[in-house]
Amino acid sequence: MTILIVGAGLSGISLARFLQKDFLLVEKESDFGGLTRSVSTSGFTFDYAGHFLHWRSPLIFSLAQKILRDDFQVVLRHSAIYEFDRYIPFPFQANLEFLPPDIHRICQAGLPSKQPARSTARSFSEWAKRNFGPGIFRYFLRPYNEKLWKINLDKLSAEWCPRFIPALRGKNKEGYNPQFIYPQRGGIFSLTKNLAKKIKIHTSCAVDKINWQKKYALLSSGQKIYYHYLVNTSPLPDFLNRFIDLPQAVRQAGQKLKANVVYCLNLGTEKVPFDWHWLYFPEKKYPFYRLGVYSNIAPAMAPAGQSSIYIEWSRRPEEKFDYRQQETIVGKILKQKKIIGPVLVRQWLKINPGYVIYDFYRRPALKIIEKFLTENRIFSLGRYGKWQYSFMEEDILGAKKLAELLNHARD
Ligand SMILES: Cc1cc2nc3c(=O)[nH]c(=O)nc-3n(C[C@H](O)[C@H](O)[C@H](O)COP(=O)(O)OP(=O)(O)OC[C@H]3O[C@@H](n4cnc5c(N)ncnc54)[C@H](O)[C@@H]3O)c2cc1C
Image (cartoon, rainbow, N blue to C red; front, side, top):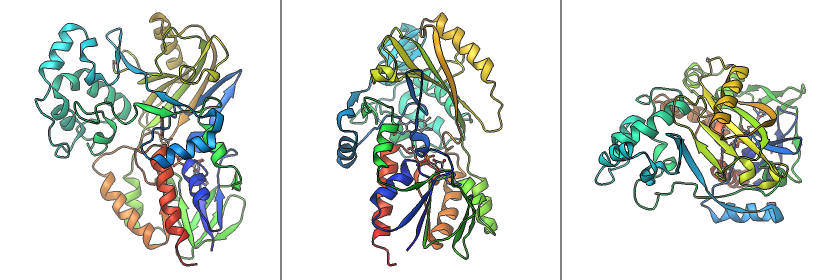
């Protein structure tokens, strides 16, 4: 039985690791790892924006421990919001006393007296106001999320919120990532590289076309591969575009799926004057939304006395991004605020798609697509294969679950 796996990012590699059947794993890039690659230059190491392994499952903890060995470390989150020229420890809603007194009063006065039923709000705006009140919405949740998602927040669904936004009270008060696993050396790719050991990956080999009726795929190498099962981990809309004679309803559903693009500036600098792991920037005067410092988490990510930094911007796919202009603006602002020192190394990465947009078209469109794929022995996996806001743990576990299903499938 041949299982053809499209893409050797974390999902494709995890699936291959858990499969006990024959598979062919193809990756269009010359390196495997997808978003969990890391890049090194002049002694600085960077991920494709910060990739910290948050976990809930003991299985993920022990897997990471086993494969990272001496490089395994658990880190307690130390992050903040940079606003009103000060550092407000994250989560914002749990640290209102750090705000200027007048803003503190407004946020405090608007707090809901009890936690509302979380599932009732449809849009992000409605959900955020109901759960945190108008003050927190105005001073943090709205400006930050407008920057990140780049859509009107009334048109953004609230379905992803309870998992990702720390609650005001109760056991989710600290959010999903109060601690995380991060390799001591080599960035997140240390995890992926070790996970991929002994797995045969065909790099520089893309799936170009899929004939779903005859069950074969054409590869960029010119090969024609007949499959019993096809597993996709590449971005779902691109994947659907590769189908020959895709039913119109499915094609139209694919066109409804939207994502933003993330631009990431990596900087190697003299040591930063703070020990925060990452900072959120909600204010409009900062054109980026987040800045993180790898070397504050794993010192080996930068030479001694220096820092390895990433800064993230978000754009709609049709928007232009002026790299040089943004780099100049960011350098000026951050130096003026004494957030970064002299820059020694710079490098840009473009992450497209970046964040899947949870608008109200997404769910019905996915229903149509999934039905078609399942009926044709095709599975779509991972953050972009499932077109979801998922993290590494979830994608590894999703791959494991599918491997178990395929391991039991009849040949
Ligand atoms: C900005 C950002 C920050 C993040 N931070 C975190 C974090 O801190 N913690 C966390 O747990 N998660 C984080 N994530 C999520 C994490 O990146 C994903 O959960 C995970 O990397 C998804 O892996 P994947 O294999 O599903 O997708 P990908 O990494 O996208 O892999 C898909 C692979 O398919 C390949 N491919 C595409 N088309 C073809 C084709 N036609 N033929 C063959 N191959 C193809 C691609 O080259 C790629 O290698 C973050 C994501 C982003 C965007």
